[in-house]
Image (cartoon, rainbow, N blue to C red; front, side, top):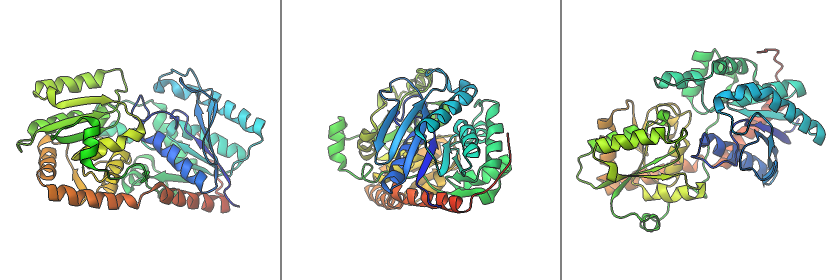
Length: 409
């Protein structure tokens, strides 16, 4: 049986949403880019997501063989913590759409725990394999940082779907091992498939030109890209700058929006003021995804200070632009960054250790250049065409040898 059409379920994360705003981030990019790459290879992909503010068409074609289909799934402005109760409504809408259009799918691929509930129900109803990519796992998030709270249903759904899914996609050995350790998942059903990067968009550019474009002068630039929320650990960037004593004039640039009003941003701004760094940090806010390469290329170092990253797309995008990364050694970041070669991984969220690594890079043009070149070379093996080819093979194996599983939640 060949794979001709796949249903992607991404209930809460529309691939059309701009990364860096609200809960939109790496998963939105992942779904869109993977679908586009598979579409270019000839597979037809329908991406099902919930209705939200700002959509112009309920069905949006976004590339060859790829369309996004918006369905009702609770109030468009509902908080993510309340979405679990709306999954049956979304599933009913999906089934009605499928019947109305006479659609048949060869595989269902769901993204995130909410989507995985829908994907399991759909795949079992139509008798096709279910592939799931969780992107983040609730139990790991709650262990990674004190104060992280997840819906009570989340770990239950994650465990049940791991038991019933035909294939679980993990980004890193760390994630695969956590699934087995925390959820008792069958490691034989877990495949390692990395995230990817658009090498035509994220590529090295002339630093002097992009800095002029962004209105930057000769300061050393430390860059942070991502949502502004406690789990991302942005305060560590400020504390790192406060520890630096290299004599270099340093400016911190923060690209991304606060996910909860301006609470976390205000906290980081207050910290910068207390460290007498408030005139050295710029909060740019959300920028269009196509603008990100300019910021990566303008930077001397990209800092990823997260408490938890299942993969770490920002690190890969930075590396594709030839900019070294200093990051916490968490989740999938150690599978992307080659410590001492394309950047540095720090085992503890210690400002002194981060500052030491950042200073080593910015104080040596030779090291910065060699790391940047190695980073780009590493990223070149992780283009979306390569990732899509691996994923197609995963689908093909399952459709040729469908797995029967009667586990229910």
